[in-house]
Amino acid sequence: MSELAKNNKMMQVLDWAYDKSLNGLPGTLSAEELGDSYLNKNGGIAIKACDSLVNWQVGKCATSGFLTGLGGIITLPVAIPANISSVIYVQMRMIAAVAHIGGYDINDDKVKTLVYMCLTGNAAVDMAKDCGIKIGVKLTQSAIQKISFETIKRINKAVGFRLITKFGEKGIFNLGKAIPVIGGIIGGGVDLASTKVIGKISKKVFVN
Image (cartoon, rainbow, N blue to C red; front, side, top):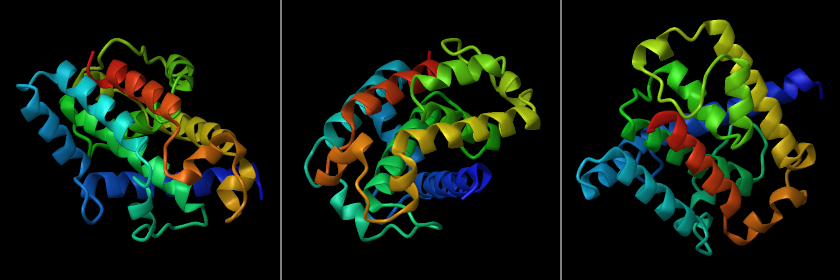
């Protein structure tokens, strides 16, 4: 399979996960509903709501069996292990909820690309820098609208390749294979370290 074909498959998975994050899966809150619930719990203070959400997400993901319930209701556009698709969905929804808490329109394609970028964790810093975006300085709506279509394509392409590397080629495209990088997820828990990093990056992009 060519590198471009792999990247296209990864983008299909990300688009699927984003759609489910926005619209919710049966029995789960959408990203907007999740963000609103934490804003309400924290008096409408975005930074507090974001910190509370990320801490809850990290703790919840560590709970054995948290992802098990998702497996039966996930239907993917391409072959990918259920444990990986569950992780992508859970982390994607967290990032989108943080973006909503920060006041961004998560239905905007440019915001969606920034959410995808955050999914790569620390790698997002260099990606953003390469595209002239400074992480740690909250982007205004006008600044987001100035992001060109070419920049969006560059970010999406970089994200796709980064995640293919992260999850492992065999793990992504061959069902039932062991995924050494995130093998622990099979037991029901998400990689806590990466989830914490992703939450921190998301906060820097959308809330600070």
